[in-house]
Length: 393
Ligand SMILES: NC(=O)C1=CN([C@@H]2O[C@H](COP(=O)(O)OP(=O)(O)OC[C@H]3O[C@@H](n4cnc5c(N)ncnc54)[C@H](OP(=O)(O)O)[C@@H]3O)[C@@H](O)[C@H]2O)[C@@H](O)CC1
Ligand SMILES: Nc1ncnc2c1ncn2[C@@H]1O[C@H](COP(=O)(O)OP(=O)(O)O)[C@@H](O)[C@H]1O
Image 1 (cartoon, rainbow, N blue to C red):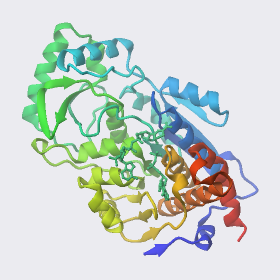
Image 2 (image 1 turned 120 degrees about the vertical axis):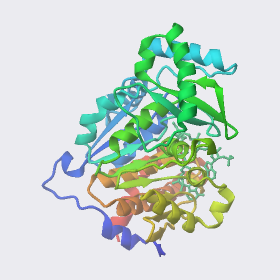
Image 3 (image 1 turned 90 degrees about the vertical axis):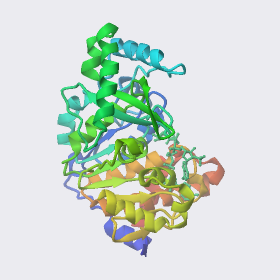
């Protein structure tokens, strides 16, 4: 176990050659944000630039792209395809048929086919971050099971489905679709079954809320990606749904790209490991290593004294304070780690740099603004001060 130090952090900072241009410092593709979490897209994109990345593209729904562009001229945006209005209308009708308390289907829900739009961007990027504010759109106590995917993308993330139940549900819903819903829906959407209280409710069919369908298609697309991929927030909740479906659906496995980093807070890691938060918190190092080994990924277990591990080596972060306990600071961290990855830093070193400097920025910010008054957006302007402090030793 190693505690991160200022000297160590200085030794792994990436170089800034004079003879350089923006692409020397890498391109982050940040897939983030949704109707209610536009701020997460803003914070996770700008923070990548603040640690030195040369170029950041935010891929999100058109309204999120518009909002972020209005706030900052520094981010390049790429608007993703959302479900067609006809599909949204049909989905809402299906939801109303089956659930009394059906939520309104988000008109900015990303289409699984948006992954096709992203192919060139995925190729151009030096690092990819996914999940900040992506929106699961429903209680995380509910699980979604994909029972049929009728897109030209086959969503196959090694999910073993209960085929009998899938067939039953598909037939059931398909008869509805055949009777009065439009065919766009069939080509655009996964058909889902809600699981409540660990029990499948096969007669409660609702459309996927949030960006589940899009995320599963994306995960399939990037499974063999050799670039660093950072999974945060709702991306982790989607993965938890795949890993821990209720018993009737059997065991599932998820293959993450081989240079992946996950950045869970304790509850997100507890969901991934299917355990309770209190137990996890008593042995943070142990469970972070366990998850790193099980998922073959680098784990950044957030909180006071964040734990960073690849399953073997463990680093403990000494920086940070309660100013960081405020909505959006985790989104800033994700951008910082992806920004270092884009500059060619190894994933484990990028995680150490991001976590240490994030905490140090929080310490310097708290001196000026107090631990009470600092905002996640304030943190952005303290990242350069933290870097200056490291360079000064
Ligand atoms: N401006 C924006 O656009 C912002 C957008 N954001 C985006 O919103 C999305 C959802 O994020 P979220 O914050 O709504 O849900 P999430 O973090 O899962 O908390 C759910 C529950 O988990 C628990 N819990 C949380 N932390 C814990 C901890 N350290 N240790 C232990 N438990 C912890 C706690 O449960 P409790 O303990 O209260 O039962 C809490 O109520 C996500 O995509 C994110 O990127 C946010 O970043 C905010 C700014
Ligand atoms: N008391 C604290 N001391 C040090 N760091 C903290 C503290 N509280 C929160 N943090 C840090 O702030 C960030 C919060 O991230 P997260 O829980 O994902 O919030 P959000 O989802 O609102 O962005 C993490 O990097 C975490 O380590």
